[in-house]
Image (cartoon, rainbow, N blue to C red; front, side, top):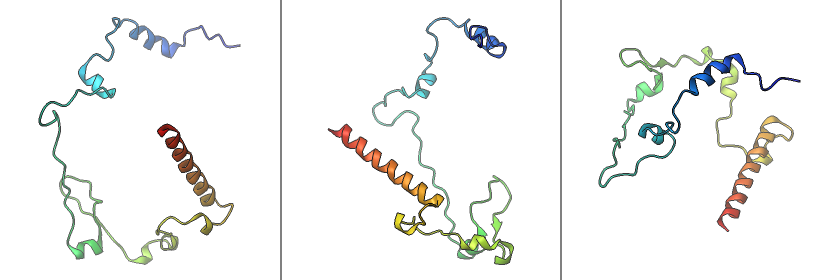
Length: 137
């Protein structure tokens, strides 16, 4: 049987360094309490620390939208979006992927992985609805 009372060498250093903290000094900083979900109340008028929404530029050049994968350049300066190549550069299975709306359960092949994932997803939705109805009563 393992001796659970024996200190683990890796944790011993951590435990001894934490034990020197004075009592009741944890989570008293305003930043720490805000991080724990206990944010300060909003003041009258604008909220302290609120910021404007960031508007991202939308590409409107049709030639660029057709020939490039817009948004793939992550560099702040320089760089360029990835150019779309001819269809022969890509594998055949890429063009056979289903990209439409989610198939209904009756359209899926019984016993397939997608079938069981769909059943699981529908079951989770059903349980959530039932629990919300129980909470509402």
